[in-house]
Length: 187
Image (cartoon, rainbow, N blue to C red; front, side):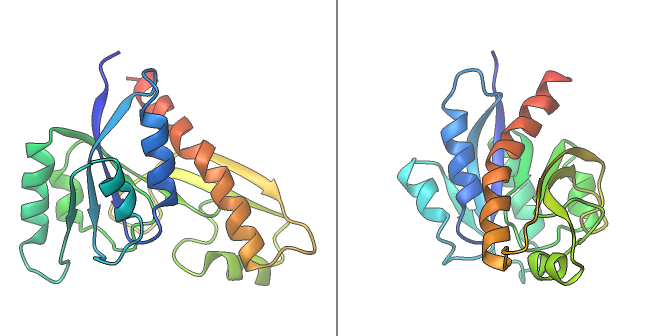
């Protein structure tokens, strides 16, 4: 199997990054992680890149030409897919259009419900019966792109924000790799 080069964008703890690194070691998994990008120099997830000797870049999203530099890096590493894994910045329409390959995101709700931030709190306030995660293509509207797959679980009366986050993240660890496999199996 010829693996595709992937870049993972993160902003925080990087638990999905760590999971994808682990999965990418399997020869049947379709991607190799060649680059990690973060907009946060203190993102704990950068430690996973360092520990696994994966090149990483910290980008200053306030710099006017950061997207241009980023596109050059993606080209240099021959990146075929970008996985947004807890990346807390919106990519511009221009960037999305110029990176004409695949950009996918994992979101901690059953889209199209609960786009954006404060997801778990909003789910609880709305007294939802079930929740989960969605892997979708990134387009120029927030959490809007074509859905690749969803996974769900039922909420119980004792769940709080932290429980929902933990349950959702466990689900994400199977959903994100499954979506990546699905993408490359269909090509």
